[in-house]
Length: 399
Ligand SMILES: Cc1ncc(COP(=O)(O)O)c(C=O)c1O
Image 1 (tube, helix red, strand yellow):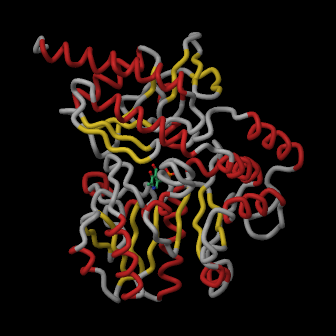
Image 2: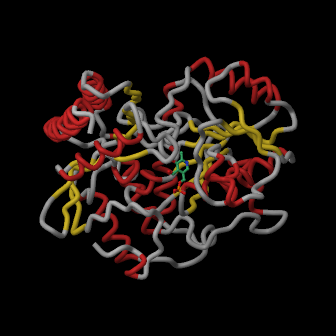
Image 3: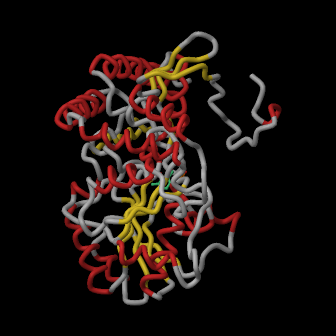
């Protein structure tokens, strides 16, 4: 197949999947060649309510009929933005009562970092080893993978890293920090789930030092971990919450959420202190409002039961060394990057999409739609088991 550059498109990887998409419905992506692939990764956590959900699509049609972009974010009152904000805030604690919509996850992170500096008057940020927050300069600066940062340095000054889920390390947070930023559950590090004690101590340390707690739930939020937002598992609340991916119901939408009295500071000194042309695009917001409403109807017990079933099935397979899971946020460790590559390719050729982590090469990810059925899960596990078996046989033959 022709590569992307030959079609005039920037190429982000030298090893693209290169599948040609025709259409996508529910848990399946249908390809131009007439085949279909069961989507076990939801576009890296985006298609959380499946592909082409009829209620989302109906809202999109309606919004397109009403209006597209009318004016820069924050100037004109638009029904879809109001609705998207209210539908999101209904899930969040009273202290998080203002949403700033942006276009992507990394943009939500950059906005949150600026807000933290603005509120505290401090400059430094504490971030976590293993953390991934995106690829704009701000988001890259607080992401820990050195090989991804090095070619683009110098990045933001005043960023330090501590080990994730390490209680002792919290002592390094002091009154010089504007904010501490962590994914509530680390994604790119291979689904690292912290203890509630650690997160509670992190919250306490932030309270003691006046550093704001920014939680990045761009990947682990919006139902992915089996609750609407991952921090609900741990008995803490952030000062700023960053969202993206599934928030838009398949449309590009990010957000950072904070207290009204804090968010207000972005509007003055200077005027329009943080601004984006397309943030909160009405079409993306129309889609998001429906996605948030769909989250209300989810059967969380069934999601946990199915998640546990996937975990129990996978851990019994030859070649699987560990499974880490919260809800439908799953990492499967294998012995090597080669083993992972073999299984991802084998599964894809047999109609199942699983995928890599950027920074954790010996593991693959599973993050299906929250609306996937028992039968679809069992079909996916079946294909996956065949891939794992094929890897074990290949290893036994030493080839
Ligand atoms: C935890 C986390 N934060 C931030 C981002 C960046 O989001 P985006 O790619 O929309 O900029 C990602 C993307 O994978 C992510 O997983």
